[in-house]
Image 1 (cartoon, rainbow, N blue to C red):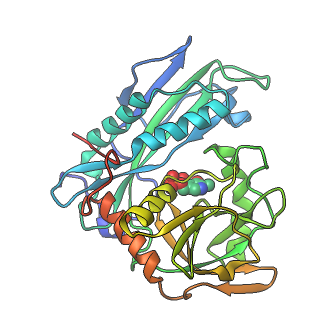
Image 2 (cartoon, rainbow, N blue to C red):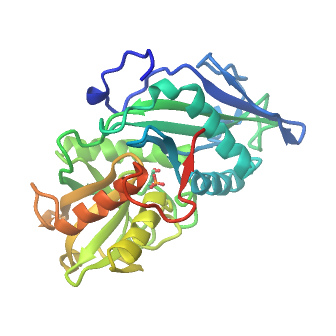
Length: 340
Ligand SMILES: Cc1ncc(COP(=O)(O)O)c(C=O)c1O
């Protein structure tokens, strides 16, 4: 590996300034070509809509070093599509899928030395984002936009291997029934800071959000999607417009069905019917899978498989998907984009 001096084994999920980032500006109806820059500061108008009205959205994906030393991105086209849904919802200009993927490729290539080596468990996390900028005071879309991508090497979420954690149920909602829960916009995360802190103060890793209309069904687990494995080995995950469609979740559904021969189903998951599951987990790019030990709800604590050990189905799902991401297991067609 190159000259950067990083202790790969002890990386956490924290910001480290890497050498290059990508910036493209939208002005007068079109995106410019975009370029790599060294400066990690943005200079924007104090009247930018991103600062006042939350006109911003983002994505998160990873680059992986394979055993053979190749660098690959996992399903960046899916992140591009989801980013465009977020942009559309906030009246921001869409970004052509090829431009989004090219920006990610350029950033990984330019920061190649920061892609953690195969076997360290660490990865290069990419954070594409778009913000409304320019002088604007009224509540209306911005006159100009920035699309940027930066990257950070991050450690494996669980240092000592997969470990179950416990969750409580939030009293707050993260999203409204027909609001912005289904897209990746900053406002959803601002709304989640307080319930997260309350959950941590109560001794839990994070909180579970129920559906904002009836508060009877599971929607999200912190900033991740929920899945449960039924006693007859079905992979079940909630379906709702206010859940962010997790790329990891849809990838796990494919793995469950096509690699492990399981039945998969998206449907309502009731918070008072947790005993239909023998295992449960949260899934997302950061950790891939966080096994759920137990869930606290209205004073009761429901344990799934175990508070200490990961269940066998969850383990198989995790091993297969991470195997695909690191190039050890053959990927479905189109899932992997090599960075050359
Ligand atoms: C609210 C929320 N739900 C779910 C996810 C998981 O999505 P993905 O698997 O695409 O990372 C994320 C992370 O992006 C998230 O922020």
